[in-house]
Length: 480
Length: 95
Ligand SMILES: [Zn+2]
Image (cartoon, rainbow over all chains, first blue to last red; front, side, top):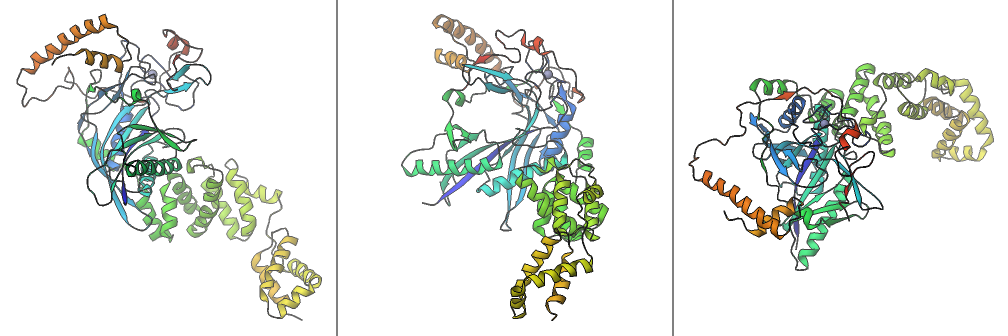
C-alpha cells in the first residue's frame, strides 16, 4: 500500500528580550547554573509575576508577520505539571485566549510549487529550566537560568506532507524572526525547538491516523532523520497488523531512534485554569498599526529585488536573502563597491563554503562590509588575481574586523605580477625546458597549454595575471 | 460530581504526592466538599455572561524590559531541602 505522511509542528521560539517574561532576571545564555534567578522565577510563595512589555511587542509582531489575526484581548492560563524543570509546578501559558490565531505561511518548494501551511495559533509562555543529570549517582540538578525566559509557541495545522515542507517552514520561521530581530532561532542552543506530530494514512484517504509527538530534536538534520525513522516505524507497525499508539516519543540523536517516553511522562493532564496572578492584556489598534509600519522587508521581497535590481539568479537571490546576516553583508558591501555580480561571486563561492565547511551560522560572520568592499575593489583593479584573492579572502573572513588588507597583501607579497617581460622570460624558459610538450602543442594538441599555464603560475607563486599568461603563451608557443 | 477514590489517587499521582489509605479517604471527603460547592455554583444561569478572567477589571500591567540584579545563588538555594553549591538536588528524572 502507498502511504501518505501527515505532520503538524509545534515550534517554540525564545524571544530575544533582555529579561525574563515575568521578572527582571537576565536571559543571557550560558551563565553559571542558577545565577539568573530570583524569588519570582524560582516560584517562591508570595511572589507575583509582572509581564514584560517587550514580550508582547515581539510576540504580536511575529503574529502579524505570520499573517495571524491578533486578538485585541488575551490572557494567561496555568498549565499544571509536576516535574523538576518547573519551579512552580505549573507553567504560565495561554490556552483559552492566545494572542494570535488563524495565520499561514506560504512556502516555495524546490520543484517550483508553492504550499501553504496554516497556523492554528501562537501563544506566549515561559520556558522551563534545564535538568543536568548526574552521570553516576541518582541525582538531578536543575538549572533555572532558562526558567521564565519568554517563548512563543507556534502551532501549525497538520498541513505538512513532506520533510522538505517541514524544513522550508522552519527555515522561513527562522528567517522571519531574524529580520524582526526578535530571536536568534539557534536550534543548537535551544532558542528554536520543534516538536513534530506525525501520522500516516493510506494515500488518498482524508481521515487522520493516530499521531505520535516527537520531542527533543535539536537540528534540521535531526528533524529529517527523526521524520524518516518515525515514518518507517509507523508503516512497519501498521503493515504488521499493529496499531500506532498516541504517545510522546523522544528522539535519541546518538541512537538515531525515537523512544516512547515513560507512561508517567506521557500522562498529559494539565488541568489548565485561568492564571489569577496576571491581569489580561489589551492591544490597541494604534499599537497594531505601529507594528505593521515597522515591519521589515522579508526574504521573499528581498530576493525579488536582488533579481530585478541587482541581476542575481533566483536561486542565488533566495539563498542570500534567506538569512538576515548574509543579506546585510551582501547589501552593505554592494552599497559601497557598487558591484553586485562580484560580491555575489565571493558570497556564493567563499562565504557559503566557509560557513558549511566550519559548520558556522551566518550570524557568526564577523567580516565587515567595508573590508569586503575594499577587497572587491583590489581584485577588480587587478592588484591581486582571483586565485590569490581566495587566499586573501579566507584570511580576511576569519580575522577580526577591521582587516588590514593592504598590510596583508604587502606582508605576504601577493601583489599580482602583470609584468609582460617577467612573464615572457618565465615562459621562454619553460618552452626551452619542455620541447616534447611544445611539439604536442604544435601538432594540434592545444590542450597541453594548460600544463604551461600551471607551470608558469607555479614559477610565479600563483601571482601572475592569468590573462597576461594566456596571451604570452599564445604568442610564444605559436612562434618559431 | 462524585469524587471517587480512584480520582483522588490519580490527582495525587499527577502531583507526585504519596497518600496512604487514611489520607485518601480524608482527601476524598475534602475534595467532595469543594467540588460540591462548584455544583451549587453550576446551578446558576450563566448563559450570555462573559467568563471573568480576573477579579479586578484591569489590564496591561506591564514592566519595561530592564535587567534587575538576580538574587545571590546561595540565597536562592537556601530554602531547598537539598542542594549543592550551584544547584538544587532532586531525584534523578531519567533512567
Ligand atoms: Zn527571576
